[in-house]
Image 1 (spheres, protein in one colour):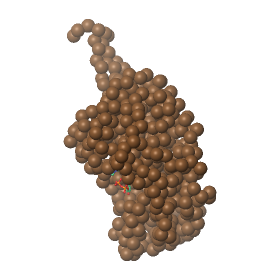
Image 2 (tube, helix red, strand yellow):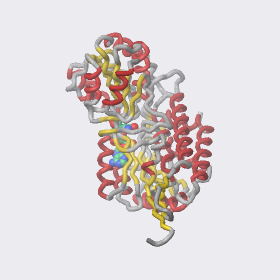
Image 3 (spheres, protein in one colour):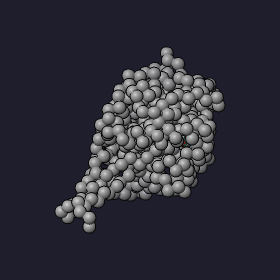
Image 4 (cartoon, helix red, strand yellow):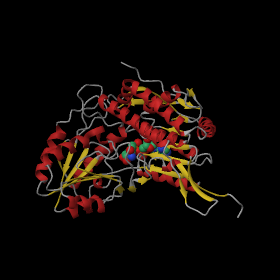
Length: 478
Ligand code: NAD
């Protein structure tokens, strides 16, 4: 059994131990597994200086060389999968097998963006003889990136992959609750010889770090994944300095279940997906709008499959769902459940904390939740599924669009006309029909409305890390 790593800052190509620290808690036990350092203002200034110097080197590195190095680091992470996954399970709580899948997904993000590094094509605009107009895509500059705790390795991977593939340097503030995932990534890049300063990793007090880094003129892009409220604050701070932002924020994904679908299959798949990662996924299917003719059957199957979810310590084989990742989530989910009950919702399974050790919560299904319940508007980020009946597709779409979020949305139907109406009218950056997979490394991922700006992945994934320069060149002076 591997031990939890000693977490350090990584600045200018060197590991930096720091005296000030805070504990990292294993959410399955509530006990500390390690410590995470708290960066000082001087550490952050060093990181900015390092990222500035790193950018000067990396922007001059050929895209093919960047891609090769990213792929080498990803290969190393694949070799280290068991070690990385064990760290993730300890700090986050998710089942070990799911942690391994997360590491693979993180590596796929690196591998996809490495390929994209060599495809940041510009274009030639037709012009008069002796005159050319050429559009170049160039790296925007040093990035301040912020990644959350729900996917300790693949969330940092997305930010690091996008920045490095584009030729940018970055300072990543990964989540203090789950620091090891990002540290293993930095280790892999260190081991394959990434030039000093190109990737810098810091931890500390989140608001202090963002307020210190974002106003710095050296920082050219703020890339954040997390809640809409924090994203809004960071966007405000960035706009004061005319700094670009890439924002992957919250979601509250609707699932429209039409009367023609295979109800058993749709409900079974829905239960598994709603409880995955204990519901702490921005694309979690959370609000089910089910045609009234199949409502009872859908509710029965999703309730039974959710109740059957094997909950426990992520290191125990066979466990399907671990604890909530931190005590804040436990408090928030408990409050949402109590509020929904008070508003008149029916709980068909779950609704309670499990035991008093760690942060375990029962997989929970609500039926007939009134619009007045907070959970109809607030992203649950917990193992909660809301199942409400609707009388038509139009009502379902109206309900689907009734929240400020617009990240992922899903539909179950075999009717082409229903699909066409959902494509036209559902407000979401990602719409999936008959699958609850919202995105892959090769597809663009991101939100509309309060779910953010920009896309990660796909051919769009590097756009925010690049700036467009139009070069006009006349052979003779005109
Ligand atoms: P939070 O908004 O306080 O924190 C979310 C992340 O942002 C954390 O990693 C935190 O370190 C970071 N953060 C917080 N304040 C910051 C600041 N001022 N500057 C820079 N970074 C900052 O919420 P939380 O309690 O950790 O998580 C709860 C909510 O966050 C959830 O309800 C969910 O909406 C959202 N969340 C979303 C995602 C996602 O993938 N979109 C991931 C994790 C959390």
